[in-house]
Image (cartoon, rainbow, N blue to C red; front, side):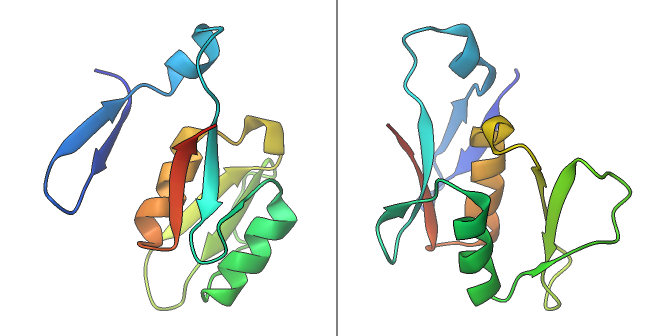
Amino acid sequence: MAGVWVFKSNGVFILENPGAESSQGSARRKVLVHLPSGEVVNSYSKLEKILTGLGWERYYGGRDNDLYQFHKHSSIDLISLPKDFSKFNSVHMYDIVIKNPNIFHVRDM
């Protein structure tokens, strides 16, 4: 069962298959939305500005040069994103949502 498990506050879970996005020509594209501003996050510069405001910092200790990574001093969480924004997909979006509750949301476009 490939996909992403999303746990909602009411305990109900949804299984989404991110691989289906590229395999279905008519599938709707997913976007990451910053809830306080209502804006779609459409670049890493915008995302980095928001994450920095939330206490996340760029992490340069990783060995993979193909990733942007962010960490928080107050947690063990690490957000890893592909440097190429065109490879930024729903798996990465849900990772951000889970690590920043009530700040981001993934929507179909």
